[in-house]
Length: 292
DNA sequence: CACTTGACCTGTCCGC
DNA sequence: TGCGGACAGGTCAAGT
Image 1: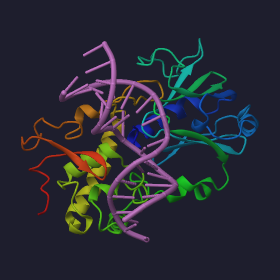
Image 2 (image 1 turned 90 degrees about the horizontal axis):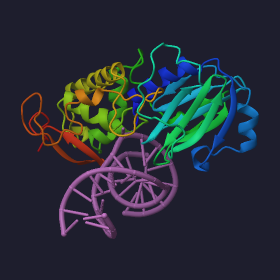
Image 3 (image 1 turned 120 degrees about the vertical axis):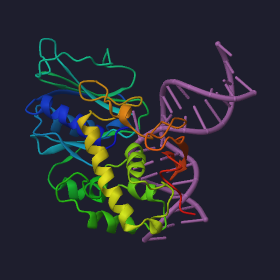
Image 4 (image 1 turned 90 degrees about the vertical axis):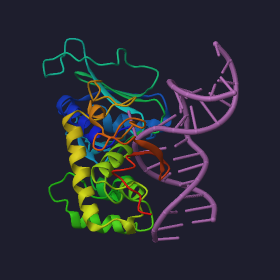
């Protein structure tokens, strides 16, 4: 499910609710969702408090006062939903209009109780995970974090960096290249399709055939599309919800994603769906011409 | 090495 | 209704 904008939305919500809170109880109902040894989990989580809620690519990282961090990946269907205890508000004032009425539900895999509320890790398809690891050196030591490419929305990220990394994958499709998390962290299927549409590049174009001008358009488009989505609370297709359990509204503004059969908002041609890089791929046949 | 294809899981939708 | 197959926002391991 969640790509960079969705994970960032969840992160921001959790940061607001969890920072400073002490963990009082932890339980997990599916081992692969939280594979650490129980003894370590109890020792390093109980009575520890949450220092911050951070994000790297599509991963959430929560350093704890015990010197260990929770590392979480939502994969396709993961959710992190916080529920304040009775009598404890969300802190912002407004009541939630969450679509998730009762928690835990049948997809709840991990429950973390804190002083003022409970964090539920739900994951229908069980691809996601929660892990507990030593905070010191985490970003360099952890296999997943270590391989990630640059953060696309950071101030220091440059076109030169993007171009060099993309062009290393010269024999693959441009879509496969930008989905590669070692090239740039956080782009997934929705923003790949939306970015390629905005940059007017056919998703199946071989990287070697994408001009520098087009690559520059793509660099800008990916960042703009993801920033817009963050401002709208992300994209909710099926499962995605933020930390309160609410949906995001970006998909209402999507130009091609899940819009096959309807008219292109730019030229009126019919949006097509095909398969590129093993993923469902949406594009406008007129705006995004495949080079012969 | 670069690249592609299945596997990991559950649920839903579509055609017969 | 039921049943089989394809497909779903992501990564890995294993194959060529």
